[in-house]
Image 1 (cartoon, rainbow, N blue to C red):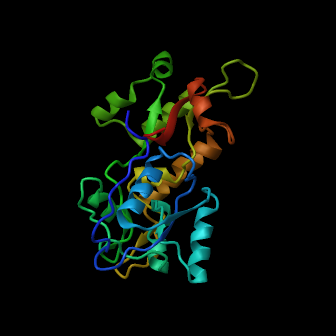
Image 2 (image 1 turned 120 degrees about the horizontal axis):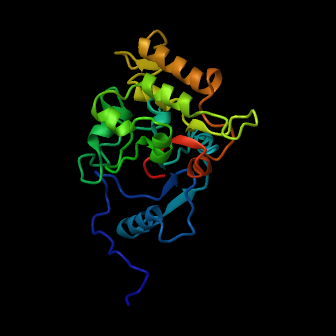
Image 3 (image 1 turned 90 degrees about the vertical axis):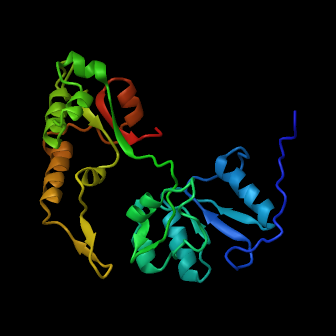
Length: 267
């Protein structure tokens, strides 16, 4: 067996686009440093060996990481490399917290998705965050047995026939939301989810849009926004076919207390 400590030979030219390689700070919510087999830590280790620099991983969770990014930027010592998601863009670019990245990263490489980078992280025709090729979208998982037992059509078959719509999904979830033991309390729901905002994307719209000057504009009069808002209102407050607040959505789905689970494809 070979050694578990694989080393990479340092590059003769460690400059990046004409700039000398330097020590970096890096932040990604939930990123630890103890697991040396973690893909991110392995990549950091290899980068350090290739360029002869050190990378400091800044500890943060999902509730505090953006605060740390903004505080570092305000202090004049911004974090060099940061995790990015659609929740922070184009705001980070507009505020100057991040800068265009194409002089440092080849967004056309096999590991990157240029189309996703342009769609989600471009601002004024420049890309501010690189999207990897293995993108994990939000999807709907469903309990086929539960739907069969309730006499409902398979959503995939409805989709193939062009009949899978917001209204069809809502009516299906309302039918599946019931009191199964007769105690007067709902104990099975149509859906469990944590991301109500995602339905805007599913309906190809957003609460705000960006005008030709790169500035935000409210988009509340868009019919798709109105439809989605009414859809979410019915889900959470009117018909209440989403599972109870605070419930573990995975446990709820696995135990058959929810027919649909909205989650990322890696879940």
